[in-house]
Image (cartoon, rainbow, N blue to C red):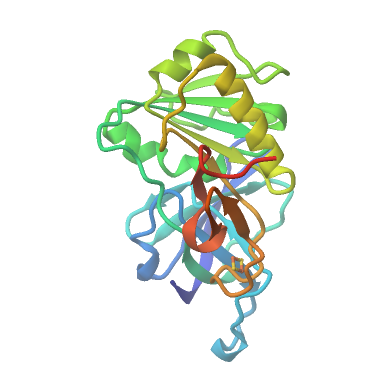
Length: 252
Ligand code: FES
């Protein structure tokens, strides 16, 4: 992880509510993988490296990577950005998602958050011919998906977090990744585990992962504000996350 500077090269509106920013970034970020994030601060031209500090930056999960130095970020359309905006970036933050070696199909769930934290895995998994289902729950159902690859199956969950063929979808998935927004994330992950347990008796280790997007005050393991309780241990979202096996995470 290191600090570097980047700038917004291009802005594209992808649907009614979201825009995508192409960031021209330092080559050191070209190896960033799905699951890893950036801590970002907008800066001015006269920003000095001595002004560096990790605190209170925005947490951005790239949704795609182009060539070796363009990272794509999805942001609400109401957030004001202009091409040429300079950014100070600390990253990569966190660990890449750990996929099974023999992955044939994967279930992604976005619950009360946009699926942005899950989108960077789409291109590499489609290249491996992995079947992908994306389920939108709660406020995530407002997310328009027309710009996502057509090979992905999109499902809108009902108010009780179920959907038709749920048992089949869960049985068919080799792994499940659930993104929840910051706030009541442990409660929301608990909701998901309850609905999965009702349909599947045995939930093995490394099957369902919660993807946390808490604001990271420092992002470098210094403040312990992102500490999570797991069975028998504690871990930091910024260093060990963002994905945690839901059979080990202590949920509300
Ligand atoms: S955000 Fe400070 S330790 Fe994780």
